Length: 285
Image 1 (cartoon, rainbow, N blue to C red):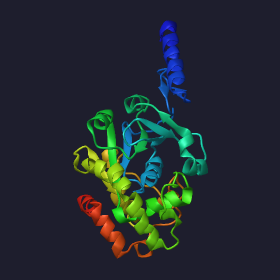
Image 2 (image 1 turned 90 degrees about the horizontal axis):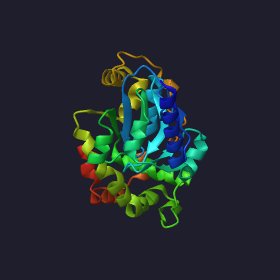
Image 3 (image 1 turned 30 degrees about the vertical axis):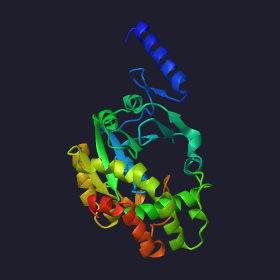
């Protein structure tokens, strides 16, 4: 590479960093990237997930298979991301808003390299599909009642969102809290994530995984490893599930959610009024 070309590329790198005010690295092509590490997988990968469906559990599984996380959680509409690369787990769980950057998703994907992955609750629309056309896409789903319980617990435990306009988190009884959450926050969940993600379920180029499948790896690891190995061109791989199952991640709440503790007939009524029973059925539950 000539000196003139190198200088131009370095200038472009500086301009990029200055424009977005974010720490970037330089790869072998002198282009800005989020991480320089790579592995054996020849594909760029995107984890598409419902909130609390196992986003970071799947991320840990991919890392166990040799893939590299970019450390980015991209917004659902692709307008920016949270940068978790340099912060502690605790800061990421509670203060994520301090690490949000505005950058169009088409710019983000240009900085992702083979064997690296991004995560997000990506909406199914033409813009996101176009951005991810060169990615291997994995859509992870979970039984929606459990997603909702886990999401409610996560918001309450971390305090990461401003809940001053809501009252559900003040309830002492768990079942009353669940009902209040569905009444006050359920429509936000359904309209922001559940409905906009449905389209990924029937895409020919998307691998659909279930949270429940990953949990079964303790007893039957071969099934999901075979699926991922074939989809990502990794062949047969063997890993120890104990290395990532039930370990601390950005969104792990410490225990699995329990329907018996939180769900009730009234909660079920709200669940159905929100249209989530039909979405749950569409997802195969």
